[in-house]
Every structure is written in structure tokens, then in C-alpha cells.
Amino acid sequence: MQWDVKEAKKYARAGQLEAWIDSYLRQKDWQNIEMAEGLKKAPRIWEGPVLVSLKDIVRHCGPEETMDYKIRPDWWEHTITNMATGFSAPETLPPLILQRVDSVLHARDGNHRIAAAQLKGWEELWALVWMNT
Image 1 (cartoon, helix red, strand yellow):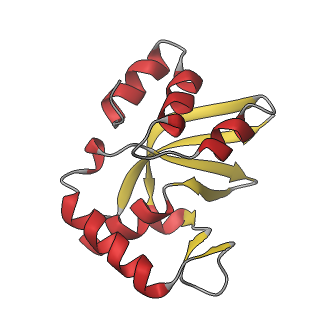
Image 2: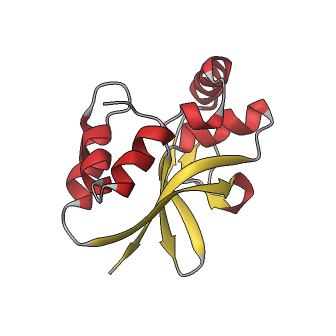
């Protein structure tokens, strides 16, 4: 299985997007087991993959004091710089996983990718967006 936009679109067309998301969150390179388990606790309505403007996304992880998951600034800068160096095009990355609450998009997976993409000067990334039922 691939972890890029093309593969996510293929699974979405087949009605298997949640299976792709679960596999993605459990595989080694981008692993987030807690989120995979959390997503199974309630039904979700999914949209995407869709292109989303980075300025419309609220991050929850980073070095800023307001972040829910605060990261040391030196580690954050090192990580996003290394990530940005390896990025070639938005469609080659796994889509972000966002939650829409009212009209606000919250980054639930992909906070580092958002910052790395901004470092590259990109304005949009592909995303999967969920709404709670």
C-alpha cells in the first residue's frame, strides 16, 4: 500500500477510505496508533482527499506556547527542515488528517508536514477531513 494522495483517492473511490486511514496510521513511518484507535470509537463522515489552504488549518502541535502538544523549538526546526528537504510535491505526501469543528479545520495528523510545507513556500496540501456524526 502507498501513503500518497493517489492511493488515498483510489481507496476513497472504492468506499474504503477508513481502511486506508487505519492502515496508514498503523504503519511504521507515519505511525499514530492512538489516533487509529480513537477514530474507531465513533462513526465519522469523511471528505477527501481535497486540497486545503494551509492558512485555513489550526495546528495543535509545535513550539508555540498555545499548542496542545508543545515541541522543543530546536527539535521542531530540525525536524521540519529535514522533512521539507525531502518533499518533492504535495501529492507525493500522505494527506493530512483534519477534523472540521463548526467551520474550523483542526490538524489531527500532519502538523509537522504543514510546517515543512510552509517552509517550502507551499500554500496548499491534500487532506482527509472528518466530521463527527
